[in-house]
Amino acid sequence: MKILALDTSTEYCSLALWQDGSVLSREILAGQKHTELLLPLLQEMLAESGLTLAQLDGFAFGAGPGSFTGLRIACGIVQGLALATDLPVIGISTLEAMAQRIGASHVMTALDARMGEIYYAAYIHTADGWSNVQAPILCLPQHIPPLPGDNCWIGCGSGFDQHHEMLSTLYSGSLCRIDRGCYPRAQEMAQLAAPRLMKGLGVSAEEAAPVYIRNKVALKESER
Picture (cartoon, rainbow, N blue to C red):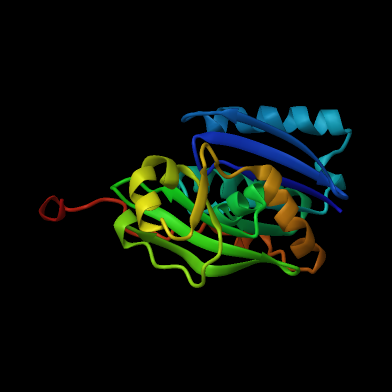
């Protein structure tokens, strides 16, 4: 099984090539230059691996939540590649990818959503993979939902970086530590995508779509 994954949901641009358990990856702090950097990185990585797009078995991308423009870039490029090769596509949650990166059994993930809000989710890792304790939501940091039980949770993501003191206080009874500087990466997305594509859970290029969560991107003057 050979899978190409890419993510442009944040200011980082990352790609990963999963080959039967081994991962070749590239990432760069792209700012607003994801479109300019992505395809050259892809060509470089394929050249190093000795593979062509026709030899792949599927594609994965960071479906969201994240930057609206970034999500559209990743989805659009993957759709184009999948159409050209007639291969399946699978979208991977950016929040789940961060949980995969941390690798602990109980992980809270949060991305800065701007406007004073965060994209938030909580995951538990079991023998079957990651399961949601809290499905991805958009909320104010002070409105994050409580967590069940008395487990030791690890917090990660730009939401925890941005609202460190508030979230540490709100989760003082269950938050063991915060791993700073964590962001979604294609490497973990490829790892998560592999078993799902093996099970035939991929979709056609036309069916691939970002997961925005926030449908309203601007506040009216009266709402500010």
